[in-house]
Picture 1: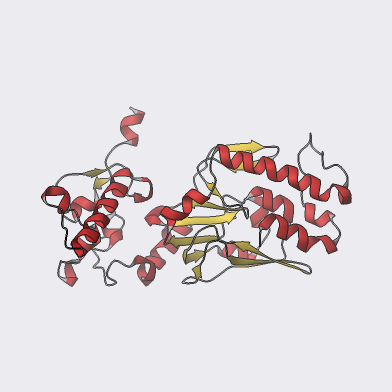
Picture 2: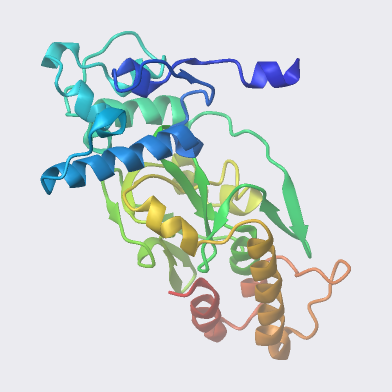
Length: 304
């Protein structure tokens, strides 16, 4: 019975509603990010587009597969349904932005009202020597994390290793909506006393929302780094290429274990053994170091 409830159709798939395929029901709650069917059809549509441009169109049913948005663009403007209508979130609303959701004011408003402030679902946690890692997220080597969100967006935050290292921040400067991010480039600035450090963006894309709680009270971040302490929502533009560069599951666990050992070695001369609480790292390591070491330690582990 539980399996039947989990797989109950949410409604006709977007590809079916657009008329690209004849019959296909959605069983992913319209979260296309992890849908294999969506991924396969996107790939096929892109192949067909490239072959058509080269004058080598594919015959048969496969050759008729086009991207769902391209199919809907053939409709009269007043009959092109907004993506949120297709996903059964709102009544009919015509798309006025050529299905470029990242540049749509209504989409940003909708995500801010419904996705950004939604209660985050609890997930399983892996404990690595006192450092928590949620299952199902991707880690960047600069200690930011990426989690899949609705509408093809991703949520970005700072992992628990970094919050344990940095301790409480005086101020966190988050980019505004519409700001482009480039992977491995500084996208967020953080201040603590005389320390001004940056966090590298784990993926490229455009900021669609930021967490106002962090700007008002930076203490929310170390208290709940994977929940209420998230930092940004981003519409990624190269997620397929960039996700394989991130770490997940056993790779993320091994990476955190290596980082813990590196941190112990880096600060042992200043703090002595860090084996408090049964060998786990102490809280606010940066606060226990001489301020002259702050910038170097932050650079070494945040990779900025």
